[in-house]
Image 1 (cartoon, one colour):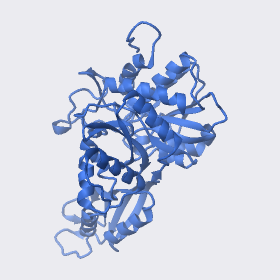
Image 2 (cartoon, one colour):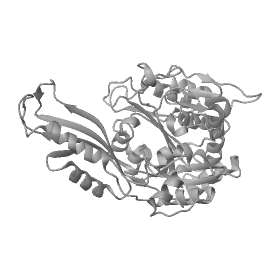
Image 3 (cartoon, helix red, strand yellow):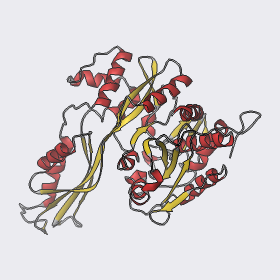
Length: 447
């Protein structure tokens, strides 16, 4: 598994790339209906890596094969509140059915090409899992405990909202996180280029999510007859209204801080009330605009339609799915607007919801993460940002734990990194993985 980079003991830099490859090779596809292979094999691999350096582990399953791993690593100052350092072992499915969705490589082969590890999970988030595991292993071998207690966790089911992973752990095993006040996980800490300078986006907030089902009911009948009570017509109109709705600009503090920083770097005007000015700042982030552009307002995206069984039969019911993402403090407002857009003939049901998060931007942990990055990349800047998606930090927030996204990767400016999340040909540079181990190692000395 390891690849020595020189004489002497094995280091995180030696282990992180082959470890990422090995994790990718476990097919942990999460289809959202518990029909996938589960995380057990990958979890057993993680257990072996941590037992190898002396950890006692808690291994548990919410359902057969849906396996999570948690352990506590004693720090130099056990009186300080603990830090949770966590990842997830599942991945979204890799579509390979011909045409535009084809991968250039087998998504579960963990291949290494042109200085990049390719495969499903290389970015989301088996790269960070490997960085965590390799750094922890090196520090334990060298007798270097972290500054405070660290709860290490690898969860199941994050890609379906964490119901069978982090949420299950928080509900059934909260004692494992006793004394923890902060957490670090994915989708932050990667670099972008703005105005010719490298900037690292540190995730301090997350949108909330509401996965909704729209239901229209009407009178079933023959397709040749006039039917003024057709649920397909009612539902289609509601879906069109929701999908076309232009939500107003709404900048929460994390978004404001990010755009202010971008304005300074790019020499652009910052005006939080001007749609054109905000759009220019978002565009200045290059590929990261894909993520950031969804954080300056609410989003409601229709995703599924279900109705009928035969073309000449009007069904009695029609359904649609909507992925709604709300900003911190705006859930009630969003749900009221969706109900109004759906209209009186369409029922709105919440299938799954989870909280919006906003952690302190000026916390000592943020300063420590910033210092760890800039020590390894002098001249770079670190900017807070709001994530349009969600992480397992949502579950931990129920225990009062403030969560951040910090998987530090120094990336080439021409790599469309956000496109790697859930995308075809997911891949991560090997030198970025090694950079990340150095940053995490520094961070564990100070936090």
